[in-house]
Length: 575
Image (tube, rainbow, N blue to C red; front, side, top):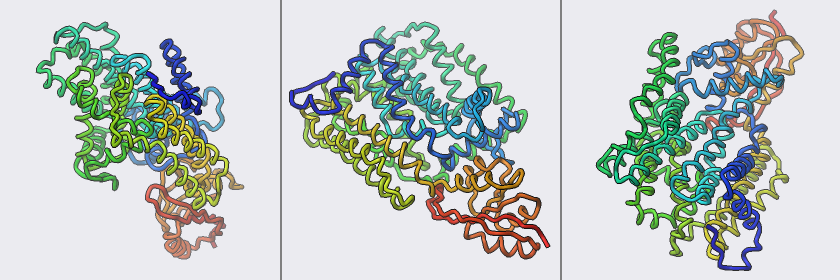
C-alpha cells in the first residue's frame, strides 16, 4: 500500500515510475509475473556474460560439468583425475543440459563459455523471485506479494548467486516452492480449527517433487529447513495432524523414486565414497569446524544481513516490534518458524558463508511486506534511522568499486560513475523522504539504487578487473600459441578457473614437475608463479631443458587474497 503525506515529494524521481509499475503489476498475476521477470533480468544480467570464471567454487562446478560432457559420463563427478563428491548430481545435469543444448544450436566453443554454465543459476534466481510471489500470496495481498518478491529480486545475496554457476540459486527456488506448499497446508488447517487440511493432489506433488530436486541439488539441507519449521509449528500447536495434507506416505515414495536412481548409480560406481566425501568430509567438517578458513563466531549472519539483504534489510529494524507483537498469529508464526530455528543452527555451525542463510530470506520479505501493507512499521525515530542504510550502502560500494578499479586495474572506470551517482541520489531520496512518502515508495527508490549499483559494479567495474582474473590472460597466451595442440602445466597457481579456460589436460604441479612436463613434448608451456621459479630453473638445468621466458602476468589470487606474478615459459628443445 502506498502512503504519501507530502504532495511535493511525489515529483521526486524515480518513485513515481516504480509505483506505476507496481500498480501495473497488481492488476493480474500474469502482469505481476512479467514485471518480476523484467526487473529480475535488470538486476541479474549485468555482468552475467562478461565476468570470467570465479574461483573457486564456480570454476570447480563448471569444470566438473565440462568433464562430464567431454567423457559422456553423467553419473560420476570428477575434477581432472580426482573425484568431487561434495554435492549431488543435480546442478551438474542442469549445467550440462544447457551446454549441450547450446552446442546443438551451433554456439561456437560452448564448453568454454562460462555464462552457459550460469544459466541454471539465472533461471533459478528468477524462479525463486516468482516463487516468493506465489508463496507470499498465502499471507498477504497481491500488492504485498509483489513487494516481497521485489525485495528478493533486489537482494545483494541473490544477485551474486544468480551470476555464479553454483547450487544456491536453484536450491533457493526449490525451498521456496516447498515452503509455499507447507504454508498453505498449515494455514488451511488452522482455518479448519486444527483439523487436517484437504488439498488438491497438485500441491503435495509439487512439495515432494521440489524436495527431491533440492536433495539432488544440494543434499539434505532442505530437510533441516523444512523439518525444523514443521517440528516447531507442531510443538507450538501441540498437533502435527496438519502435515497429513501433504500425503506423506505417497509423497515420500515419490521422492524416493526421483532421488534413488542416481544414488544407486553412484554407489555402484564408487561404493560408499560419495557418502564419505559429501557427508563425512563436507557436511560434518562444516559442523565440526571452520572449513577452508571460513570459520566465524555466532552473530556473523546478523551483521552480514544488512549487506546481503540490502535494500530490504533497512526495513527489518522498524518492523521488529510489529512482528513480535503478532508472533502468535498463524501466518506470522509460520514465517518465524521458517527462518528462526534454521538461522540459529547456521549461527551455531562454525563454518559460515554469506549465502548459507539465503533460503531463509523469503520468509523475512513476506513478514516485511505484511508490516508495510498493514502500516505497522514502527514510527520511533531510533528505529527509523535504519533507513540511513539506503544512502550509506550505495555510497560505500561506489567508493570501494572505483578505488578498486584504480588500485587493481589502474583505470577510473568513468562509465560506471553516472550509475553510481544515480544510485547514491536514489538512496538519499529513499532515506530523506521516508517520513513523507512511506515505506513502500521509499523502498522502491532503494530498489532502484540497488539495481543501479549492480549495473556499475557487476556490469562495468568487475569485468574490467583483469588482474583479478589471471587465468584469462594465461589461457589466451596458451590458445594463441603458434603450434598445434598446446598444453600447459602450472606451478604455484593452481586455481580451477585455469583448468576450465586452458583445458582439462592442464597439469597442476610444482616447479620441478612443470619442468619435467615441458620436456615431455612439443608445444608445451609452463606457468610458473614467482615462488616456484627457483625450483623450475634448478630442475630444468638438471634435465637439460632449454626454454625461453615469455610474458609475466601480474595479478591477484582472489581465493587467498595474495598478489601473484606468473611467468610463462616455453620449451625450445633439449641438448
